[in-house]
Image (cartoon, rainbow, N blue to C red; front, side, top):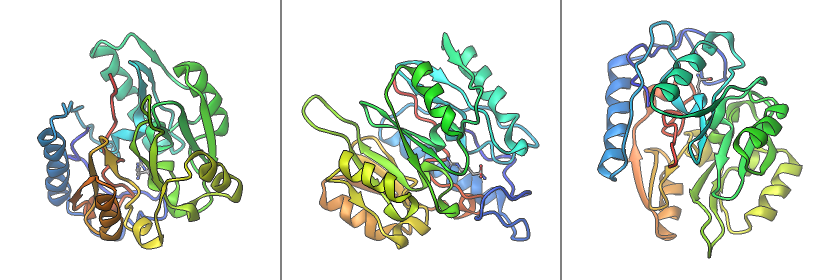
Length: 264
Ligand code: ARG
């Protein structure tokens, strides 16, 4: 995770961003700190990367790497405003002992558009990550990749429309939640084939960035407004943990965007 010490909304690269609206950086930092502390309280280790002046979106660490079995695929941003973030994260991985760090040649916004199910990688395209980056990810990470097309500009990254609730195990398939309205008709059919038991979210769940959740298979961190989704997940036996991310949402980000997951 990257503390939002230089957080701002200075440019527009998604429909959530409005530079004329004030941003309270102290509040953003307080909200981020509560998110970080929630992960620690569940027993997860949180590593922090040093934020950099001039990179206001660096708080959205999910966009900077996809890590599976300690193989790291870095990122290549579509927006020039974010391009320099990729190298800071690459260096972090190298300095922290990761031996296999590949940098993409195609536009690749990492976990913003890639979701690991435990068996295969779901990969979004349409707004940010280039479809050719999906094939590149398959080669670099050595896992099967399933491409999905996003069609609504508000849900510009896969992680704004879908998240994995529980990875597949030897005895059970992966569980996911998603908002069908964010996907093309063909991708909806792919999703319903792969995940017939998925939790289908509605517009109200999606429009507070409720699909930008983070689950460890038990605790599910969601934006505080995602009350209907939280109730349905509680019925299924998950433990919803609601966090206020109102300031970060002004840049189009939620809990997942702030969280690059490292699976050992
Ligand atoms: N302002 C950032 C951008 O548009 C937000 C990124 C949110 N990250 C995410 N994983 N969806 O790039």
